[in-house]
Length: 605
Ligand SMILES: [Zn+2]
Image (tube, rainbow, N blue to C red; front, side, top):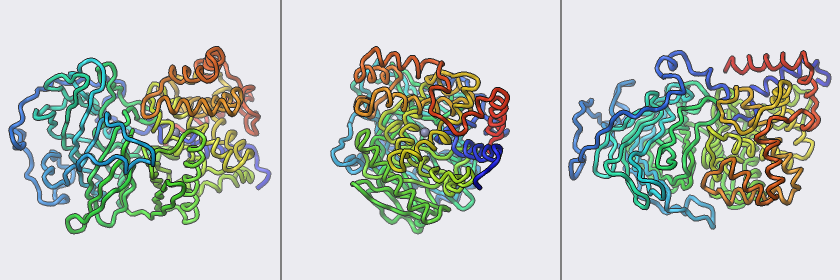
């Protein structure tokens, strides 16, 4: 229809906000309300600081580990024979798991011309994936070269699978070995972290090897964003599927309790090699590249995966249709379940196009492959990024129809926008890391701006104007009706709506304002320099500002930073004209709309 009533438009806008919420990357803008009552009973409130218990190293019996003193259930012969829900020790099954592979040639997982820094944590995992049982049982061997800093008395691991947002998933580890010493892991009260006290402090320049069996189990469709789930038809989604080495700063573990807004990302870029056994018929989407595949026991196959420079290794296994396309030396493997063939082909083509355009604008994509997986995400998430793999919510496909609801806005391309956003995270999050809790704007603002930049380049200026108006700036205009907020706050200093409004909305427009003030040439020089300086490392707000000063001059950089990042004085006059914006500025309508949207968002899925 051409002439909808304003409220008709608002319903459509509400749908878009709920579905996209600034392309909230899975990130949990509605996370707090999603923890079910049962979970709330089992987990202490976020905010409790993980408190390590005492842990006592003891010598490892040589030459091979013998059974521990802990009574354990009798090992079973096949992976599927143990009763559901039994608290089996993961170590019980270690004997029937494929061994972790040896350290591979990382070059096979990298684009031409890229090399792998050997001085990184290396995860080698051997495991069995059982989609129908919703679990991965594995053995992890982690090699940690300690580059610099004071001696470490302990290292720590995150178990994000146990966070409230993981919808009741559970990660357990068995006995942890540090070299030839067994160490009892000391879990935090909320079980999202455990500390491993080292038998001998680790000094700069030394390396240790830590080994542990683990089991991660998901519970049905769980909840939250659907990042840890098993569908009734046997699709297994593991976003937080292994113990993750906690970041080390100044000789100490960074152990923030899980936060509510945004993704739980805080890991150093590390190299992964896996050998996984999975059902013969199950397709596997995973970061990195599959380098080898052999038959396993009857009904099973074994694959080897090489994945250098991983922030988070996610995988999806089960029945999926695969479409693979290659261009400019990069392969996109698309995995779909319900998307129509035409939508699926277009998604793969859009991902390839975004990889090429971002590669030209920022710096080359570092891997030979990207997996794009359609996943039944929940909780308002449209997509989520992992290294070398992006998940796109199944609801996003078919969202083109919303353009029609908005009075024939043919320029509105929601799947393209979401795909470009998640692809852009391969640069801002993957290559340039940042603390997703303390400074979420660093990756989300640049990523959401990159997404509109892709729309502009691929679909034209008119489509970009529509994307700014409907997909990026609406929540921020709503926020501005009550005043501005700084862009550089930690995630949970914002309400859910403000997190989306400011980090994704204001942040993206901040980048566009910067582009307009600096001019094209200097702006892209800044992006390339920022990428080069922080490649596979960490950016902070301070290093972002410093890089800007190097390219643009200190005075201008400082003034811009104060105004757009640290300040809270932006008004709607600083934003582009909007078709819908006037409604938010109406003194009686603005607060009402805000309340309505908050209520909708907090109602959850
Ligand atoms: Zn994002």
